[in-house]
Length: 534
Ligand SMILES: Cc1cc2nc3c(=O)[nH]c(=O)nc-3n(C[C@H](O)[C@H](O)[C@H](O)COP(=O)(O)OP(=O)(O)OC[C@H]3O[C@@H](n4cnc5c(N)ncnc54)[C@H](O)[C@@H]3O)c2cc1C
Image (cartoon, rainbow, N blue to C red; front, top):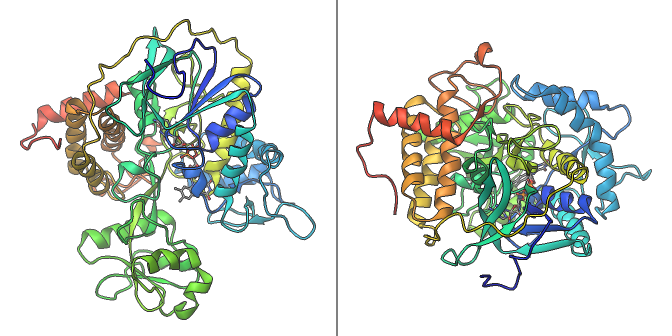
C-alpha cells in the first residue's frame, strides 16, 4: 500500500512522535534507545518555529536568580490563569534541560569566566535568557539536535509526511493516518501505534499575517480534537505587534529592540498614535501595542515603524536582519517608514495535558506549542515556550519509558475515504483573512459569531482534509473566543473590555462543544451567504 520509500505498514511497538521541532526531536532523543518513529511534514530543520527563535530559552541559571522568581514573572504576565505548580516545575527543571542541550552539542554563549551568558527580555525580573551567537538560538539548537537524532540508530525519521487523522478504539489511540506532504491527492497510509506524541507546533499560519512557518497551521490540534481530546484555552493567541508588511508570508519581524532604540509608530498622517493609548507609548506591553497598531489599520490610517530619526544611516549596521528584509522589498528604512501589522505569533492554547504531558486520550501525549500545560495562562512570558517544549518533552519520554506499550497488532484500516484534493488556495486564503479580521487582536461578539458559522461550514463541506483540519482548529479558537465574554491577557473583546473575576479560570473544551455553539449561532442567525469554499 505504500507508494514511497518508507515501510510504514510494518508491525510496530514504536512510539510515534509527530513533529521535528524542538519538542519532537528532544523527546525522541530522551527516549533512546527505545525505538521511536519520528514523522515530520518538512525535512528536519525546516518548517519548524523552533528553528526561527531569535531570543533563546528562559532559565534561572545566573547567580542571584531563582526558579521562584522566574515562576513569579511567568504568573504575573499570564492574566491570572497560570497553573502555578506547572510554572514552578518548569522554572525548576530549566537548568537540567539546558545541561541536556549542552550535552547534545548546543553551543550556548558563555561569559568571560565560562559561565552561561544570560540576556534580559521584557517582563523578566532578572537576566535569564540563554542564547547562541546573539540571535541564533533556534537555528543552533535545531541543528545540534537534528545531528544527534540522525546519529541515533533507535530513531527512524520519516520526512515529508503529514499526519492528518488519529485513529482510536474505545478512547485509546491505535494509529495515525499520514499523507505525502507533496501530493495531497496521494492515497493515505496508516501507521499503527499505541503511543503517539503530538509535537506539531502552533497555529499561526491560520492567520493571514503571521510569523510562523506554513506547517504551523493547527493540524495537530485538529486531529486530536477530532479524535475527542480535550482542548484547553484555544482562544488565547499572542500577537507580535510589528511584523513587516512587505508582501512576504510568513511576515518577517521588526524586533522590539528597534522601539527600544527610539523608533516610533506612526500612521499615514505621520501622527504617533501610541502616545494617546498608553503612558509608555511605543514601549507599552506587547498586547497594548498590538491593539494600537491593529486599531490604526482598521481605521484606514495604516501603521508604520519610523526609525528615520532614531537610527537613520546606522540602521543597516545595528539591525542587519530587519534591514535586509526591507531592502529586499525595495524599502530603505533609513529614509522611509516601514509598513507594519500585528502578526499571530504564539498559541497559549492547545491539547490539554497534565504534568506528564498526557492528553485526555489513552496513548496520546502532546508537547511543545501544540499542547496547553497551563504554564502560560492567557499570555506567554518571552522565551518560556522553548523551555516548556524541552521540559515537557523530557517528562513525556520519562512517562512513556515507565509504561508497557502494547504492540499495535496490525495497521488499522483507513479511517477516511481518500476523498481529497489539493488545498483549495482561495478557501484557505479566505479562512486566514477571516481569522485575522474576526478572530484577531481586537474581537467582538458579532464578528466572532460570523467566524464560528463560517468555519463550521468550511469544516463540514471541505473537499480536502488539510482544509477541514484547518477549519476545525479555526472553529475551536473562534468558538472559545466567542464564549469568553471578557478581556484577559491576549484575548481582547471590544464589547467586553474589562476582565471579569468570575471568569478567572482556564477553558476546557471539545470539538463537540464548538459544534454545539456553531449550531446555536446558526439557528439564531442562519447564514445568508454561501460558505467560503472554493
Ligand atoms: C519567529 C519566531 C521567534 C520565536 N522566538 C522565540 C524565542 O526566542 N524563545 C522562545 O522560547 N520561543 C520563541 N518562539 C516560539 C517558539 O519558537 C515555539 O513556540 C517553539 O519552537 C515550538 O516548538 P515545537 O517543537 O512545539 O514546534 P515547532 O518547532 O514549530 O515544530 C513543529 C514540527 O511539527 C511538524 N508538523 C506540523 N504539523 C504536522 C503534521 N500534521 N504532520 C507531521 N508533521 C507536522 C513541523 O513540520 C515541525 O517539524 C518564536 C517563534 C517564532 C515564530
